[in-house]
Image (cartoon, rainbow, N blue to C red; front, side, top):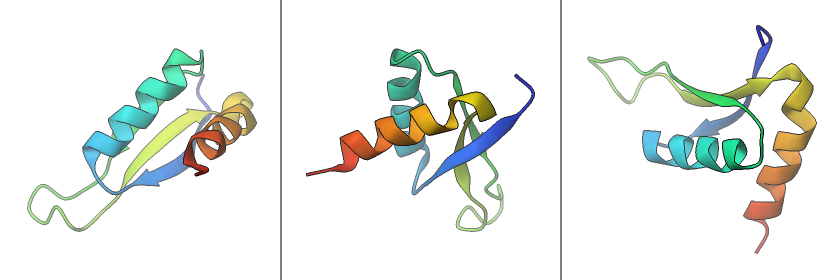
Length: 68
């Protein structure tokens, strides 16, 4: 699984970890990449990444949980 692809940019670390947990609970391996600066935390992004082969499943799962 060397083809990690970003599927979501989170507002904070907690949001990213919750999403990662939801993906992994549905058998989609995921990682959180926190690229924020340690000096200036408002600079940078927190992204959730999945393997390229799981992108469509992951996006579908995210869209199901974001609908009201």
